[in-house]
Amino acid sequence: MKRKAQAVWRGPGATGAGTLTTGSGVLEDQPYSAKLRFEDEDGRAGTNPEELIAAAHAGCFAMALSFQLAGAGHTVEKLAVDADLTMEKEAGGWTIRSIHLDLLGSVPGISAEQFESLAQKAKAGCPVSRALAVDISLSARLQ
Image (cartoon, rainbow, N blue to C red; front, top):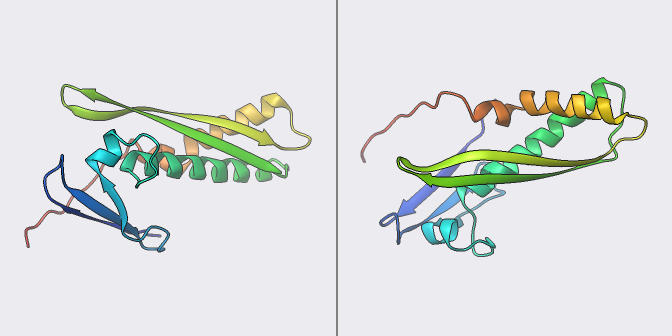
């Protein structure tokens, strides 16, 4: 399985701007820029890579947990996941330091202990959790 997305950037980092487009079309020429990334905290004017990582992580974790719960014989009524990503400026540049997943679930007939155990398994096994620590390859060429 492969998924694709495209970023197009024009201009210098601080004052330039770009667009993001996904293969599914969910994002199409969605604006992003340094200003939107670092100054526009409400995110109403566009998105940023960290917001997209947080959304991907929340969605992936919720889906992974629903599979864990189904495998244990439980039916999910609702899983609400907030992903809070923290990024800090360090000597080497901006770094994603952590992502906190805040889960609120409605799953009839499950104990709190089993829910916690399955949530921990889902956190460890969800592809986005694992992707945040994988090797990243790069092909670079000039036009």
